[in-house]
Image (cartoon, helix red, strand yellow):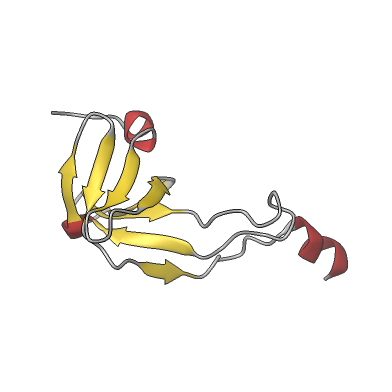
Length: 96
């Protein structure tokens, strides 16, 4: 089965360890030397409609993906949060 990234983004990511919905894939980390996908990034949830920024991003290593189905991606992951790397909320831009 092959899939484009746009199709992959529409698949819901579910953690099989606890049954919780993680979200949807927002970004990928690619290793350009080996041409392989290292991890999937799920952006943090917006706080107060995004005015107060977002929660921490979640990085899911590609090795922790169990199954990629037609509608869902099943992972067995604790995940690790990533710093927001330069992304700031609208209010923090206004008030420094």
